[in-house]
Amino acid sequence: MRLTLNELPAALERGLAPLYLLSGAEPLLLDEAVDRVRAAARDGGFAERSLHLADARFNWGELYADACSQSLFASRRLVEVRMPGGKPGAAGAKVLKELSGSVPEDNLIMVVAGALDRNARRSAWVGALAKAGTWVDAPLLSAREQRGWIRDRLAGEGFQPDEAAVTLLAERTEGNLLSARQQIDKLALAHDPGPLSVDAVMEAIADASRFDVFQLGSAALGQDLRRTARILAGLRRERAPLTLILWVLVRDITTLADLYWRTARGDSLPSAMGALRVWSSRKAEFRSALKRHGARSIRRLLVRSARADQVIKGARPGEPWTELQLLAFGLAEPHRMGADR
Image (cartoon, rainbow, N blue to C red; front, side, top):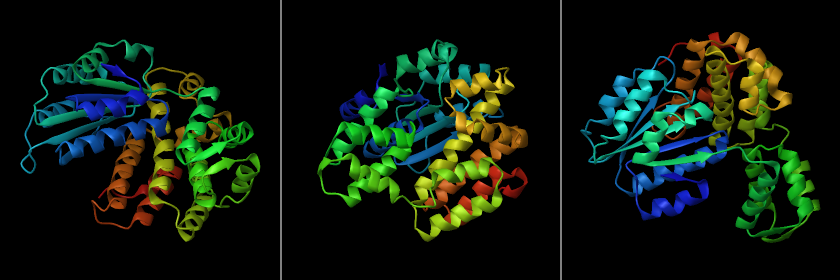
């Protein structure tokens, strides 16, 4: 069954499917869909979660064995597969098709892919997963849809924005929904619910932190270690949300990984950037980063991202700001990641 993002909450209220395929080119919307499924799984008694990162070197046999096994510690388990490249290859496609027909009752499978191209959408493995479970896609929003999304989010905070306020916020965030959400959160803290004017939005934008979290990825991709360290230090002083900083870094790392794997299989870089909707102002940053990173360093960045996420959530010992610095510096210069622990 295929659902839109708006249909997912009601479907989860009715009950959990045995497996989910979540795909899309809009990172924030995709992450929100993932969080909804995770929350529903927890509420449904799936107390344990195992995570698999399906990159080019992934052993799909390990996933099959894990997905078909029973947990020693919990009666029900969520098996999550992260597939940033969007294509499982022949071996992965075979395993996913087999899993679609043999998911144990006490396991829930969630496959999280990036943007799926036309061929992937028509593939047998996508068809099998959609038939056996639920497929939810988070496509990029058009400019009109972005304004509608901003308007709805503002309304959810109790605001009645005028059109000029919505347009200004959309232009300021340049299609970046996470940035838009951050600005809306600031407005909610600074203003009472009710009418929202363009002047109020302009004031909030002008008062934004000089250490903009969205500059961090650009500094790291651009190999500017001094600026990267300065932005991180400023964000730490301002007690910026750790999860937001990690999200920004992971967003750029995932885009870098997608670009690498697309070009590795023969796509031209301009074509890959177009498919991933990389902003013109950021193309030089990613082009520069691709010259420094290969399959091994990208894999280590993804593993390091998962580690940082665990440390921030308290699921693993460590210092969150140290993990964020290692991740940002590793994005800037691969040799600075150090040994994996």
